[in-house]
Amino acid sequence: MIEFKLPSLGSDMDEGTLLEWKVGVGDTVKKGQVVAIVDTSKAAVDIESWQEGRVHQLIAGIGQTMSVGTVMALLLEAGETAPAEVGAGGTAPATAGPAAAIAAPAAASRRMVSPAARKHAEEKGVDLANITGTGPRGAVTLQDVEAAAATLQPTPQAAPVATKITDRAADMRKTIAAAMSRSKREIPHYYVAEDIPLAAALAWLQATNAQRPMNERLLPAVLLLKAVAIALKRYPELNGYWRQENDGGFVPSVAIHLGVAISLRQGGLIAPALLDADSKPLTLLMQELTDLVKRTRAGSLKSSEMSESTITVTNLGDQGSQAVFGVITPPQVALVGFGRVAERPWAENGELKVLPVVTASLSADHRVSDGHRGALFLRELSDLLQHPEDLDQ
Image (cartoon, helix red, strand yellow):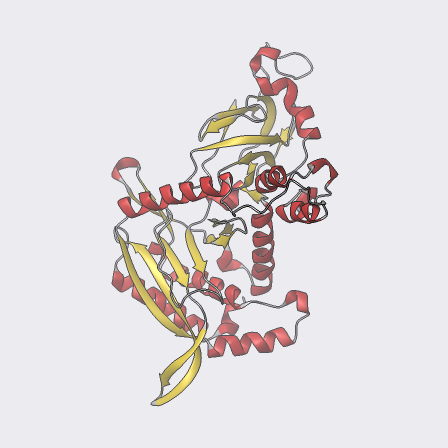
Protein backbone atom coordinates (compact mmCIF):
# COMPACT_ATOMS: atom_id res chain seq x y z
CA MET A 1 0.00 0.00 0.00
CA ILE A 2 1.37 3.42 -0.99
CA GLU A 3 0.72 6.39 1.28
CA PHE A 4 0.27 9.55 -0.77
CA LYS A 5 1.26 12.40 1.55
CA LEU A 6 1.03 16.17 1.31
CA PRO A 7 4.52 17.14 0.13
CA SER A 8 6.53 20.10 1.36
CA LEU A 9 6.46 22.78 -1.33
CA GLY A 10 9.24 24.82 0.22
CA SER A 11 10.73 25.67 3.59
CA ASP A 12 8.01 28.27 4.18
CA MET A 13 5.14 25.78 3.87
CA ASP A 14 3.75 24.05 6.97
CA GLU A 15 0.26 23.18 5.76
CA GLY A 16 -2.09 23.26 2.80
CA THR A 17 -5.82 23.12 2.06
CA LEU A 18 -7.23 20.60 -0.41
CA LEU A 19 -9.16 22.39 -3.17
CA GLU A 20 -9.81 19.55 -5.58
CA TRP A 21 -9.13 15.90 -6.28
CA LYS A 22 -8.19 15.20 -9.91
CA VAL A 23 -8.62 11.42 -9.48
CA GLY A 24 -11.24 9.13 -8.00
CA VAL A 25 -11.24 5.76 -6.24
CA GLY A 26 -10.21 3.03 -8.68
CA ASP A 27 -8.31 5.36 -11.05
CA THR A 28 -4.83 4.37 -12.19
CA VAL A 29 -2.22 7.01 -11.36
CA LYS A 30 0.97 7.43 -13.38
CA LYS A 31 4.23 8.93 -12.21
CA GLY A 32 4.16 12.73 -12.62
CA GLN A 33 0.36 12.85 -12.95
CA VAL A 34 -1.48 15.69 -11.20
CA VAL A 35 -3.77 14.10 -8.62
CA ALA A 36 -4.88 17.04 -6.47
CA ILE A 37 -4.88 20.83 -6.17
CA VAL A 38 -3.79 22.25 -2.83
CA ASP A 39 -3.93 25.86 -1.67
CA THR A 40 -0.84 27.13 0.16
CA SER A 41 -0.19 30.57 1.59
CA LYS A 42 1.26 31.59 -1.79
CA ALA A 43 -0.68 29.83 -4.54
CA ALA A 44 -2.93 26.98 -5.59
CA VAL A 45 -0.55 24.18 -6.57
CA ASP A 46 -1.07 21.07 -8.72
CA ILE A 47 0.18 18.15 -6.62
CA GLU A 48 1.85 15.42 -8.64
CA SER A 49 2.32 11.77 -7.75
CA TRP A 50 5.83 10.37 -7.97
CA GLN A 51 4.67 6.78 -7.65
CA GLU A 52 2.43 4.65 -9.80
CA GLY A 53 -0.59 2.80 -8.48
CA ARG A 54 -4.37 2.55 -8.31
CA VAL A 55 -6.38 4.80 -6.01
CA HIS A 56 -7.71 2.72 -3.12
CA GLN A 57 -8.92 5.46 -0.79
CA LEU A 58 -9.12 9.27 -0.78
CA ILE A 59 -8.64 10.22 2.85
CA ALA A 60 -8.50 14.01 2.72
CA GLY A 61 -11.74 15.88 2.09
CA ILE A 62 -12.30 18.98 -0.02
CA GLY A 63 -11.62 22.05 2.11
CA GLN A 64 -9.55 20.13 4.66
CA THR A 65 -6.39 21.86 5.93
CA MET A 66 -3.51 19.48 6.55
CA SER A 67 0.05 19.63 7.83
CA VAL A 68 2.91 18.68 5.52
CA GLY A 69 3.35 14.92 5.63
CA THR A 70 -0.33 14.14 6.24
CA VAL A 71 -1.54 11.06 4.36
CA MET A 72 -4.03 12.28 1.75
CA ALA A 73 -4.76 9.04 -0.07
CA LEU A 74 -3.86 5.36 -0.27
CA LEU A 75 -2.77 3.73 -3.52
CA LEU A 76 -2.44 0.06 -4.40
CA GLU A 77 0.84 -0.96 -5.98
CA ALA A 78 0.92 -2.91 -9.24
CA GLY A 79 -0.40 -6.40 -8.59
CA GLU A 80 -1.57 -5.56 -5.07
CA THR A 81 -5.16 -6.52 -4.22
CA ALA A 82 -7.51 -4.37 -2.17
CA PRO A 83 -8.15 -5.39 1.47
CA ALA A 84 -11.20 -7.57 2.02
CA GLU A 85 -13.33 -4.80 3.52
CA VAL A 86 -13.39 -2.90 0.26
CA GLY A 87 -16.49 -3.61 -1.81
CA ALA A 88 -16.48 -5.37 -5.14
CA GLY A 89 -16.93 -2.08 -6.94
CA GLY A 90 -13.53 -0.90 -5.74
CA THR A 91 -14.86 1.93 -3.58
CA ALA A 92 -13.80 2.50 -0.02
CA PRO A 93 -16.32 1.95 2.80
CA ALA A 94 -18.28 4.97 4.02
CA THR A 95 -16.36 5.03 7.29
CA ALA A 96 -12.98 5.20 5.58
CA GLY A 97 -12.91 8.99 5.31
CA PRO A 98 -14.94 12.01 4.27
CA ALA A 99 -13.44 12.17 0.80
CA ALA A 100 -14.31 8.61 -0.25
CA ALA A 101 -17.95 9.39 -1.01
CA ILE A 102 -17.73 13.06 -1.99
CA ALA A 103 -14.36 13.55 -3.65
CA ALA A 104 -15.27 12.45 -7.16
CA PRO A 105 -18.44 14.55 -7.60
CA ALA A 106 -16.87 17.51 -5.82
CA ALA A 107 -13.89 17.41 -8.14
CA ALA A 108 -16.13 17.27 -11.16
CA SER A 109 -18.33 20.17 -10.11
CA ARG A 110 -15.81 22.56 -8.56
CA ARG A 111 -14.68 25.38 -10.80
CA MET A 112 -10.98 26.12 -11.17
CA VAL A 113 -10.48 29.48 -9.45
CA SER A 114 -7.14 30.78 -8.21
CA PRO A 115 -7.26 31.64 -4.49
CA ALA A 116 -6.32 35.24 -5.20
CA ALA A 117 -9.17 35.50 -7.72
CA ARG A 118 -11.67 33.98 -5.30
CA LYS A 119 -10.68 36.44 -2.58
CA HIS A 120 -10.80 39.40 -4.98
CA ALA A 121 -14.24 38.33 -6.25
CA GLU A 122 -15.57 38.37 -2.70
CA GLU A 123 -14.17 41.87 -2.13
CA LYS A 124 -15.61 43.21 -5.40
CA GLY A 125 -18.98 41.47 -5.13
CA VAL A 126 -18.43 39.55 -8.37
CA ASP A 127 -20.34 36.30 -8.97
CA LEU A 128 -17.79 33.70 -10.10
CA ALA A 129 -20.55 31.71 -11.81
CA ASN A 130 -20.86 34.48 -14.42
CA ILE A 131 -17.15 34.59 -15.32
CA THR A 132 -15.52 32.67 -18.16
CA GLY A 133 -12.00 31.70 -17.08
CA THR A 134 -9.06 32.48 -19.37
CA GLY A 135 -6.39 30.72 -17.32
CA PRO A 136 -4.97 27.22 -17.82
CA ARG A 137 -7.75 24.60 -18.14
CA GLY A 138 -10.29 27.42 -18.00
CA ALA A 139 -9.24 28.63 -14.56
CA VAL A 140 -10.67 31.96 -13.41
CA THR A 141 -7.75 34.31 -12.82
CA LEU A 142 -7.32 37.58 -10.97
CA GLN A 143 -7.45 39.40 -14.31
CA ASP A 144 -10.79 37.76 -15.17
CA VAL A 145 -12.25 39.04 -11.89
CA GLU A 146 -10.86 42.54 -12.52
CA ALA A 147 -12.47 42.59 -15.96
CA ALA A 148 -15.82 41.45 -14.55
CA ALA A 149 -15.64 43.97 -11.71
CA ALA A 150 -15.05 46.79 -14.20
CA THR A 151 -18.41 46.10 -15.84
CA LEU A 152 -20.38 46.38 -12.61
CA GLN A 153 -22.31 49.59 -11.99
CA PRO A 154 -21.21 51.32 -8.79
CA THR A 155 -23.87 51.37 -6.09
CA PRO A 156 -24.87 54.58 -4.30
CA GLN A 157 -23.51 53.17 -1.06
CA ALA A 158 -20.08 52.66 -2.56
CA ALA A 159 -17.51 55.09 -1.28
CA PRO A 160 -13.76 55.42 -1.73
CA VAL A 161 -11.84 53.51 0.91
CA ALA A 162 -8.15 53.43 1.71
CA THR A 163 -6.25 50.69 -0.05
CA LYS A 164 -5.37 47.89 2.32
CA ILE A 165 -3.41 44.68 2.08
CA THR A 166 -5.70 41.70 1.57
CA ASP A 167 -5.72 38.90 4.09
CA ARG A 168 -3.99 36.61 1.61
CA ALA A 169 -1.24 39.11 0.86
CA ALA A 170 -0.73 39.62 4.58
CA ASP A 171 -0.51 35.87 5.12
CA MET A 172 2.01 35.58 2.32
CA ARG A 173 4.10 38.39 3.80
CA LYS A 174 4.10 36.62 7.17
CA THR A 175 5.15 33.36 5.51
CA ILE A 176 7.99 35.04 3.63
CA ALA A 177 9.11 36.84 6.77
CA ALA A 178 9.20 33.59 8.75
CA ALA A 179 11.22 31.78 6.08
CA MET A 180 13.70 34.61 5.65
CA SER A 181 14.11 35.04 9.41
CA ARG A 182 14.89 31.35 9.68
CA SER A 183 17.38 31.67 6.83
CA LYS A 184 19.27 34.53 8.48
CA ARG A 185 19.30 32.72 11.84
CA GLU A 186 20.50 29.37 10.54
CA ILE A 187 22.60 30.11 7.47
CA PRO A 188 25.97 31.91 7.75
CA HIS A 189 25.67 34.07 4.64
CA TYR A 190 28.52 35.61 2.72
CA TYR A 191 28.14 38.02 -0.21
CA VAL A 192 30.22 38.77 -3.28
CA ALA A 193 29.42 40.89 -6.35
CA GLU A 194 30.75 41.45 -9.87
CA ASP A 195 30.00 44.15 -12.46
CA ILE A 196 29.48 42.45 -15.82
CA PRO A 197 29.59 44.31 -19.17
CA LEU A 198 26.73 43.23 -21.43
CA ALA A 199 27.60 44.96 -24.71
CA ALA A 200 28.43 41.68 -26.47
CA ALA A 201 25.40 39.87 -25.03
CA LEU A 202 22.90 42.61 -25.92
CA ALA A 203 24.35 43.09 -29.42
CA TRP A 204 24.04 39.36 -30.10
CA LEU A 205 20.52 39.38 -28.69
CA GLN A 206 19.49 42.28 -30.93
CA ALA A 207 20.89 40.59 -34.04
CA THR A 208 19.27 37.26 -33.14
CA ASN A 209 15.87 38.78 -32.40
CA ALA A 210 15.90 40.64 -35.71
CA GLN A 211 15.70 37.27 -37.44
CA ARG A 212 12.92 35.90 -35.25
CA PRO A 213 9.14 36.37 -35.25
CA MET A 214 7.92 38.71 -32.53
CA ASN A 215 6.52 35.87 -30.43
CA GLU A 216 9.85 34.00 -30.46
CA ARG A 217 12.16 36.82 -29.43
CA LEU A 218 14.42 36.43 -26.42
CA LEU A 219 14.69 38.67 -23.37
CA PRO A 220 18.02 39.47 -21.68
CA ALA A 221 16.81 37.56 -18.61
CA VAL A 222 16.98 34.25 -20.45
CA LEU A 223 20.67 34.82 -21.24
CA LEU A 224 21.38 35.50 -17.57
CA LEU A 225 19.51 32.38 -16.47
CA LYS A 226 21.28 30.12 -18.97
CA ALA A 227 24.67 31.54 -17.98
CA VAL A 228 23.93 30.85 -14.30
CA ALA A 229 22.91 27.28 -15.11
CA ILE A 230 26.08 26.56 -17.07
CA ALA A 231 28.33 28.20 -14.48
CA LEU A 232 26.80 26.00 -11.78
CA LYS A 233 28.02 22.90 -13.61
CA ARG A 234 31.55 24.11 -12.89
CA TYR A 235 30.82 25.19 -9.31
CA PRO A 236 28.52 22.41 -8.04
CA GLU A 237 28.98 23.40 -4.39
CA LEU A 238 26.48 26.22 -5.01
CA ASN A 239 23.81 23.90 -6.41
CA GLY A 240 22.05 21.68 -3.89
CA TYR A 241 20.72 21.52 -0.35
CA TRP A 242 21.85 21.66 3.26
CA ARG A 243 20.13 18.82 5.07
CA GLN A 244 19.66 18.89 8.84
CA GLU A 245 19.49 15.11 9.20
CA ASN A 246 22.46 13.27 10.72
CA ASP A 247 24.08 16.41 12.12
CA GLY A 248 23.67 18.30 8.85
CA GLY A 249 25.55 18.25 5.59
CA PHE A 250 25.56 19.40 2.00
CA VAL A 251 23.81 17.29 -0.63
CA PRO A 252 24.77 18.41 -4.16
CA SER A 253 22.19 18.17 -6.92
CA VAL A 254 23.00 16.60 -10.26
CA ALA A 255 20.06 18.43 -11.83
CA ILE A 256 20.06 22.22 -12.14
CA HIS A 257 16.61 23.62 -11.39
CA LEU A 258 16.63 27.43 -11.23
CA GLY A 259 14.09 28.94 -8.86
CA VAL A 260 13.01 32.18 -10.55
CA ALA A 261 11.72 34.91 -8.23
CA ILE A 262 8.43 36.21 -9.72
CA SER A 263 6.57 39.14 -8.20
CA LEU A 264 2.80 38.86 -7.84
CA ARG A 265 0.43 41.68 -8.74
CA GLN A 266 -1.33 41.46 -5.38
CA GLY A 267 2.00 41.63 -3.54
CA GLY A 268 4.61 39.12 -2.46
CA LEU A 269 6.62 36.78 -4.65
CA ILE A 270 7.05 33.11 -5.52
CA ALA A 271 10.16 31.38 -6.87
CA PRO A 272 9.03 28.32 -8.88
CA ALA A 273 11.61 26.27 -10.74
CA LEU A 274 12.73 26.21 -14.34
CA LEU A 275 13.61 22.53 -14.47
CA ASP A 276 16.88 21.35 -16.08
CA ALA A 277 17.75 24.87 -17.20
CA ASP A 278 21.32 23.95 -18.18
CA SER A 279 20.27 21.48 -20.89
CA LYS A 280 17.72 23.58 -22.77
CA PRO A 281 18.32 25.86 -25.77
CA LEU A 282 17.47 29.52 -25.30
CA THR A 283 14.26 29.36 -27.35
CA LEU A 284 12.80 26.58 -25.19
CA LEU A 285 14.02 28.24 -21.99
CA MET A 286 12.33 31.50 -23.04
CA GLN A 287 9.06 29.66 -23.77
CA GLU A 288 9.15 27.90 -20.41
CA LEU A 289 10.00 31.12 -18.56
CA THR A 290 7.07 32.94 -20.20
CA ASP A 291 4.73 30.07 -19.36
CA LEU A 292 6.02 29.88 -15.78
CA VAL A 293 5.43 33.59 -15.16
CA LYS A 294 1.93 33.38 -16.65
CA ARG A 295 0.92 30.34 -14.59
CA THR A 296 2.47 31.74 -11.41
CA ARG A 297 0.39 34.90 -11.63
CA ALA A 298 -2.71 32.87 -12.57
CA GLY A 299 -2.18 30.62 -9.53
CA SER A 300 -1.57 27.40 -11.48
CA LEU A 301 1.73 25.78 -10.53
CA LYS A 302 2.88 22.19 -10.16
CA SER A 303 4.29 20.76 -6.95
CA SER A 304 7.58 19.89 -8.70
CA GLU A 305 7.99 23.54 -9.68
CA MET A 306 7.47 24.62 -6.09
CA SER A 307 9.69 22.06 -4.36
CA GLU A 308 12.61 21.18 -6.62
CA SER A 309 14.56 24.44 -7.01
CA THR A 310 18.26 23.81 -6.38
CA ILE A 311 19.21 27.52 -6.34
CA THR A 312 17.24 30.77 -6.67
CA VAL A 313 17.82 33.61 -9.15
CA THR A 314 16.30 37.05 -8.60
CA ASN A 315 16.35 39.69 -11.32
CA LEU A 316 15.18 43.22 -10.48
CA GLY A 317 14.72 44.18 -14.14
CA ASP A 318 14.64 47.65 -15.65
CA GLN A 319 12.75 49.17 -12.72
CA GLY A 320 15.03 47.80 -10.02
CA SER A 321 18.06 49.15 -8.21
CA GLN A 322 21.67 48.75 -9.29
CA ALA A 323 22.30 45.69 -7.12
CA VAL A 324 20.44 43.18 -4.96
CA PHE A 325 21.86 41.00 -2.18
CA GLY A 326 19.24 38.38 -1.47
CA VAL A 327 18.52 36.00 1.38
CA ILE A 328 19.05 32.29 0.69
CA THR A 329 15.93 30.13 0.55
CA PRO A 330 16.50 27.08 2.77
CA PRO A 331 17.40 24.31 2.24
CA GLN A 332 19.21 25.79 -0.77
CA VAL A 333 22.75 27.08 -0.24
CA ALA A 334 22.97 29.98 -2.69
CA LEU A 335 21.08 32.78 -4.42
CA VAL A 336 22.14 34.78 -7.48
CA GLY A 337 20.90 38.35 -7.93
CA PHE A 338 20.94 40.68 -10.92
CA GLY A 339 20.34 44.41 -10.63
CA ARG A 340 19.22 46.87 -13.28
CA VAL A 341 21.11 46.94 -16.59
CA ALA A 342 22.39 50.51 -16.98
CA GLU A 343 24.97 52.40 -18.98
CA ARG A 344 28.09 53.08 -16.92
CA PRO A 345 31.66 54.25 -17.52
CA TRP A 346 33.88 51.26 -18.29
CA ALA A 347 37.65 51.11 -18.72
CA GLU A 348 38.79 48.58 -21.33
CA ASN A 349 42.22 48.22 -22.94
CA GLY A 350 43.26 51.63 -21.67
CA GLU A 351 40.16 53.30 -23.06
CA LEU A 352 37.18 54.75 -21.23
CA LYS A 353 33.84 53.73 -22.70
CA VAL A 354 30.17 53.81 -21.79
CA LEU A 355 28.73 50.29 -21.79
CA PRO A 356 25.60 48.53 -20.55
CA VAL A 357 26.56 46.87 -17.27
CA VAL A 358 24.75 44.67 -14.76
CA THR A 359 25.82 43.95 -11.19
CA ALA A 360 25.62 40.24 -10.41
CA SER A 361 25.68 39.20 -6.77
CA LEU A 362 25.98 35.90 -4.97
CA SER A 363 24.61 35.12 -1.52
CA ALA A 364 26.02 31.79 -0.39
CA ASP A 365 26.21 29.46 2.59
CA HIS A 366 29.62 29.61 4.29
CA ARG A 367 29.16 26.05 5.58
CA VAL A 368 29.44 24.81 2.00
CA SER A 369 31.62 27.29 0.09
CA ASP A 370 33.72 30.37 0.67
CA GLY A 371 34.14 33.81 -0.83
CA HIS A 372 37.01 32.75 -3.09
CA ARG A 373 34.92 30.10 -4.85
CA GLY A 374 31.95 32.45 -4.94
CA ALA A 375 34.04 35.12 -6.65
CA LEU A 376 35.31 32.58 -9.20
CA PHE A 377 31.71 31.60 -9.94
CA LEU A 378 30.79 35.21 -10.72
CA ARG A 379 33.89 35.57 -12.90
CA GLU A 380 32.82 32.45 -14.79
CA LEU A 381 29.35 33.95 -15.17
CA SER A 382 30.87 37.13 -16.63
CA ASP A 383 33.04 35.18 -19.07
CA LEU A 384 30.07 33.17 -20.32
CA LEU A 385 28.09 36.34 -21.05
CA GLN A 386 30.89 37.67 -23.24
CA HIS A 387 30.20 34.77 -25.64
CA PRO A 388 26.40 34.61 -25.78
CA GLU A 389 26.36 32.48 -28.93
CA ASP A 390 27.79 29.61 -26.89
CA LEU A 391 24.82 29.73 -24.52
CA ASP A 392 22.35 28.73 -27.23
CA GLN A 393 22.93 24.98 -26.97
